Length: 124
Image (tube, rainbow, N blue to C red; front, top):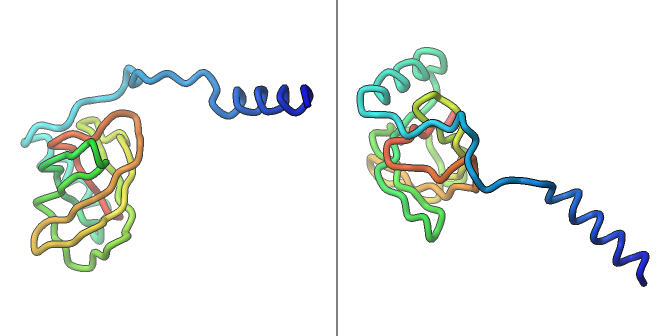
């Protein structure tokens, strides 16, 4: 019994590691409106089929965010999305949970930091 307990403790320590809850030093903030325009244009140029939007609201108690300024053509509930900061670093990932005429709701996963209003959302 002690051997099993020891194995569980070692396994748990190995899986959880020494992770810190503080964001890394290179975690940038959400882009400004002008930075968002440049990032959107860059993504659309390099990935013409990508759909790019901007987070307009975050409901952190239920990891949900509203994404506006996005062409919903071809998007489907369940599509994977990537959330980027002002330095185009990945903040988090998520999935579309609801489509509307000109916006989508996404459920996001834990990431480098909490997604924020202004962050860029991309469906590649």
